Image (cartoon, rainbow, N blue to C red; front, side, top):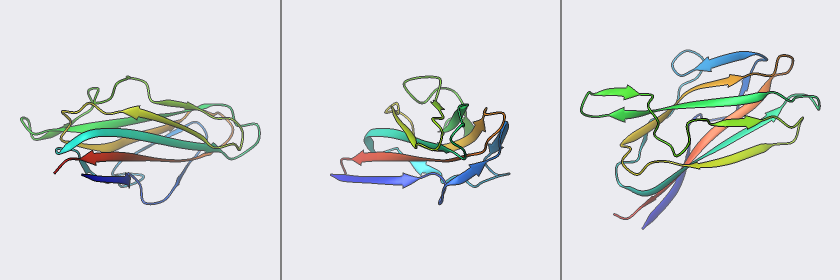
Length: 131
């Protein structure tokens, strides 16, 4: 059995206040192969730039659809909203399960809804394979 974790973005990324960053323009997401995974979970991380940071950080992911040979933003996770609420400069982290029939997954965008302060964010995936 093989277990490993992969970060979608190689280093933590700062998202300006009230803005959205997208894959291919603002950062390059790793495309993670989950084809042989028996279990996979996403871990999201965010920390505000100021003790008054209180907005939300929203993460969007895309899964690869091999039948259409394209990336699809339909739900590939157990919940449709992947949101962290900032708590000042305290790091916030949440984990979500990934549906087992996902072949590949990548980080599509990150939105910081805090109107005043930037947020530092990242996301990773933990995978268990049985090959």
